[in-house]
Length: 361
Image (tube, rainbow, N blue to C red; front, side, top):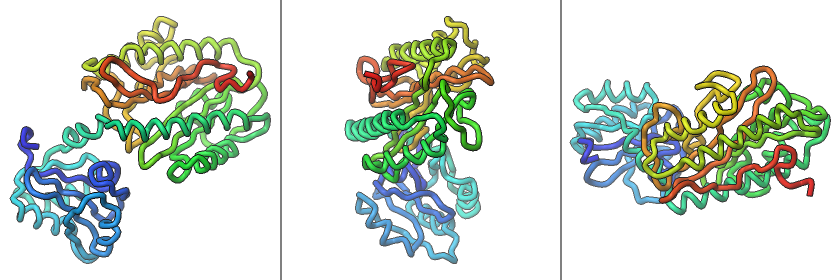
C-alpha cells in the first residue's frame, strides 16, 4: 500500500473478506466490509444488529463500526475515512457500483483507486495450509467422480446423477455438498456449459461431468469425459489430443513464465493435431485455465493477455477443452500449483477414455 500510494484498502464481504479475516460472510445489499489502513488498526463496518455475529465469525480481534437500518452506510463509512485521514482509498474490485457511488456522494475528497493488485497479490499465492485444503477438496471430488461412474446405467438422467454427486460430496464432509455440478450426455457435451433440461443416458453415449466442492471455503473443480459403452473412434482420438494439450500446458509451467504462454502452449499442441487456430472450432473455445482458491474462478488466468508471471503457490485449472460443434466435446480438467521448479498436480489426471477410474480391472 505504501509503495502504491494508497492510504487504505476497503475489502468487501465475500471471498476476500474471508481471506483477510476468516469471516465467511456473503455479500448482500447491506454493507459489510473491512477497512485496512496503511498504518493503524483495521476495522469492520457492518449492520449494528449483526455486530455479535461478525465478532463470533472473525478470527481477529477487530474493532467494529455499526450502522443502523435507517442510516446510509456509505455516509457512516465516509465519516470514518475522514477521521483516519484517508486521501486515497483502494476498493475491492467486487464492491458493487452502488456502493462506489455512495462513497463518491459522501466523501468526494477521497481518491478512489482499484484495489485488485493489493487483494489479488495476496490471494493468488497460496500458503501450504491453503494448498492442503485445496488438495483435500480435490481428493474428495475425484472420489465422487469415481462413485458417479459406477452409478451410470442406460436410462439414468442427468438430474439423478447431479443429485447423487451432491449427496456424495456431503457424505465425504464437503461444506454443504456440491458447489456446482454439470452433467452432460451425448451431443450436450459439445456445449462447454451444457444444454438446459435433463438428458437421458443412452448406450454408447459420451459422458462429461464437471463438479466440485469446498473444504473450509477452498474449492475443488474436476472434469472427466469418457465413453459409456462402445467408444466412438473420433471421440477417442479427440480425447487423446485433449490429454496431450493438457500435459503440454502442465510441462510448460515454470516460475517467471507469463500466464498467457501456458494458454499458447496448449493451443500449439491442439493446432498440431488439426484444431483451431485460436478460438476457431473444432478447437478450444475458451481460456486454458483459471485461478482457484476461495473463489472457483479467480485471478490469474491462463489466457492471452494475462502477462502476470507464474510464481510459487499460484493455483490453476488446466482444461484446454476440444469442441466439435453439434457433435461432441472433450474436457479434461485438473488443477496444479506452481512450485520452484515447475508444476505439481493436486490429483492425478485421467489416463483412459474407456476406463477413467480403473473400474474394469
